[in-house]
Length: 112
Length: 111
Image 1 (cartoon, each protein chain N blue to C red):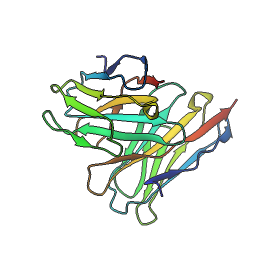
Image 2: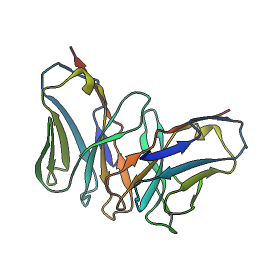
Image 3: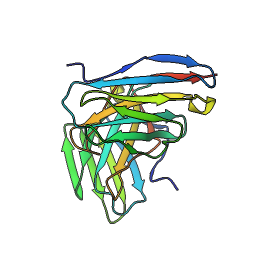
Image 4: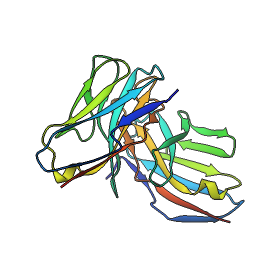
């Protein structure tokens, strides 16, 4: 089992460009999450999906959209990237909402 | 005030000693608490979860929860150099619809 996978691993964007970060899990978990991690700020929840077909805002949702494509996949979209969105993005999943979460390897995003 | 606060460290302990990591939280209604370990450049890895007051032991790790004092701690016994990492404390919100991480404590175990 691969656990939680994320693509891409690295990405450089110019201000105003758009992109989608992909996440998939093979643990049959119901809930999935997107976080960003910044120095001095720690991990902050962007959006989560408690179950297939639902999404909810986390602590820092502005500038992002998400799609729970099916039970396995949860994508994060930046419609118009800004330098403030330079960060490391982690996807996570859990069997139950806000329970023990398992993280993917992360995507390092730089917006110039 | 952040929802979850940790001393950023760095904390240094000699090999074989007990490392003590502390965390406080502001939401008195928080019900679930977690400790994660994160090596540099890697993703967080779950160590332990704790939901009720008292101690919970798993191998060399012991998590302690005191809801009255809004305090969570992690003890690492017989610390090893491989334990050198950043340790993240996390808590759910009272409403159960938010998950908050502390900024982490950097631990170095000196051989």
